[in-house]
Length: 85
Image 1: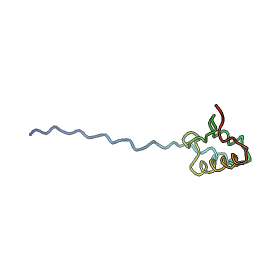
Image 2: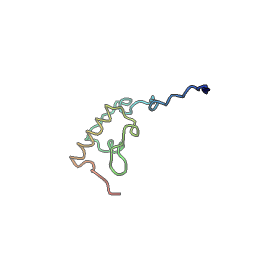
Image 3: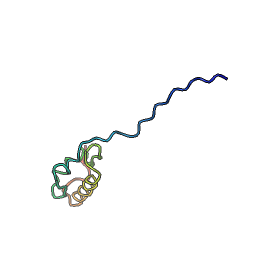
Image 4: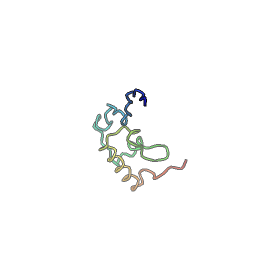
């Protein structure tokens, strides 16, 4: 049997390359609090959903803080649960 010479296989890419952009909250020493609903609205889409980390460009720590504060603001009726389209 003749064996064909094998070519080296390319490795599959492993995940995404991490971006070097810093978290907006870390960079500018901002405070995410339910008392500032206008600031929290920046991290929500038109329907009132919280943006994911890749879209909001926040670090994991501040993304968790953001979701906690948005939920607090919703309970106090400072932000809507959902917006009618």
